[in-house]
Length: 80
Image (cartoon, rainbow, N blue to C red):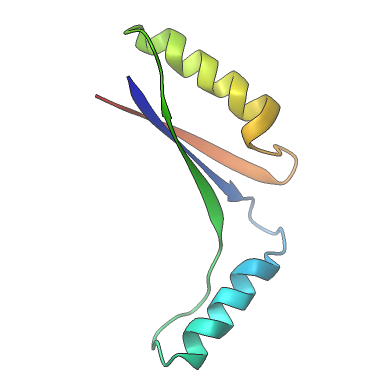
């Protein structure tokens, strides 16, 4: 079973890396960029076929390691 965990900064948290990317895109002539927020993506392959158990394990992993839940949100997407 495969899953994707996407971690993003919460609204209101400053994102200096996103601002740097935004500035770089504008300096490269990319038009229409209003703002950029950066994040991280984890593609994880899990053994077993129990979707509920896998989601619970990923939530635990995200809460403990993958995301700093004080300043970051995360979303878990299960794939077939």
